Length: 263
Image 1 (cartoon, one colour):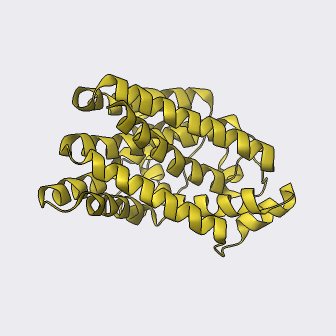
Image 2: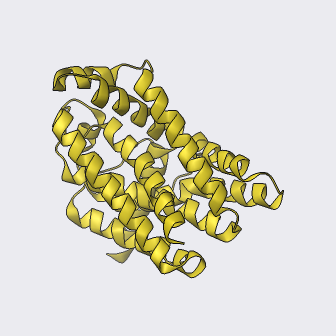
């Protein structure tokens, strides 16, 4: 029984890493089908850990850039670059499409149509530029204390993926034929397990930056997810893959802002 659970967890982690990134992930146990999509609702429990591991190269880049004495903003930009590269800008693409669709469309149908359009509009461009600058400047400030910066990168990677899966579970599918709909929705049990995993992954951060800052960061991320989820429900009736991708970027940024305010 325990052996089967471990094999399932490894398979869920492998599938999540391959789905949310372009990292070369070997087979993690005999239950891990390297060509399979994540099996939801179960695999959602592994998504925060996958986010933590996807962010690991960026944390190392930040430590190296900080040790080299590079300017703060450049350190932050390198960190964001190292976060975007393994995912192929998957979440940023969702943010861009969501910005164009939610702001630019007059009806639900028009908004969903705009979100499927691969072209970048004004709102998408602004969202990408502003989100990149916010995260880069925040990481640059946090890496003034290298340990705090590295743990913020890793914790943000986990927490933002938890926020994404929680919103995925809470909102109905706005597009029945979309990828998010085909994968299914996480159940409450898997989201709760993912939340427990996220708490463990965040646990070193209060020691370095202080508990009030971490609590404020988590609160800001939660509020960002709730606000964006309410907007998505109002504008298109629920969530899509683009909405979920945008949630990751927005909650990561909100988490960093909370850390900086509370430290």
